[in-house]
Image 1 (cartoon, rainbow, N blue to C red):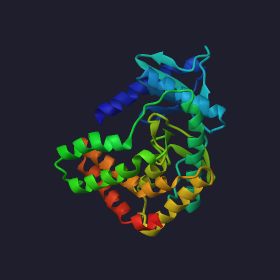
Image 2 (spheres, rainbow, N blue to C red):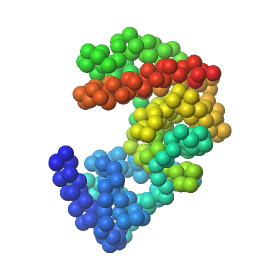
Image 3 (tube, one colour):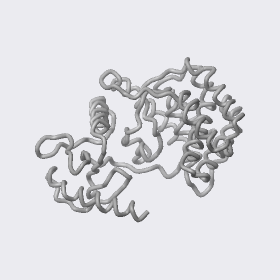
Image 4 (cartoon, rainbow, N blue to C red):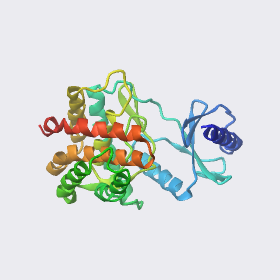
Length: 306
């Protein structure tokens, strides 16, 4: 923890050193994410260690901006550069988007708006696919690869081998029929901002990749169950959000029958993936939490199918 704080202070100093390149004299800099810092009230500066990753993200944001998708406007330096290299890091500056993380996670209207937001982004991502090459990933390949390896190495203590095998078998049965495209891959309320009940912006495309299309909405819905709140979701409350989010998505883009049938299985596989990831970090608490969500979703399968 002490090393993390020291690293954060060092990065803050570096950022304060380079703001003049954008003509900014504001010196109130505060960390908001591990790789992002707020500059005053109007700007966000983000840093990368991988130049190609930064350039890809800038290109994604530029294409989405041209498509009318609400992403942060990238601000060039006084010299007209989209980003700068400094002390082994790469930085770009953008305007801060209006909005904040949603507080009422059980609001069906917000879940409906979130479904629409995912669908709009997916439609715009089809344009990105024609202009940029992306990492081609597969949930099924991950399940059969590092997920299985991590769970086996952990001795199948959290997820039983038979449970894992059933989930993978179900996923594999219809996997080839599931539409694939560019997805966000990290859909939650810190990356999809809302203002006065409406979506105000999308951020963080670091994990964007080709994968099955329904991954995004499944990731979002399963992730709701992991959010901290005064009272956890009841089965009935969560099913209402599931129904609303799917309806919101389908108000713009229709899911195939195969996609709808795969939704419970994909959500369960995502939670097994998180359990395996946590197990690989020796995070027993995180692995158990993911397994608990997996079992919760299993108990809702019949209601989701209806």
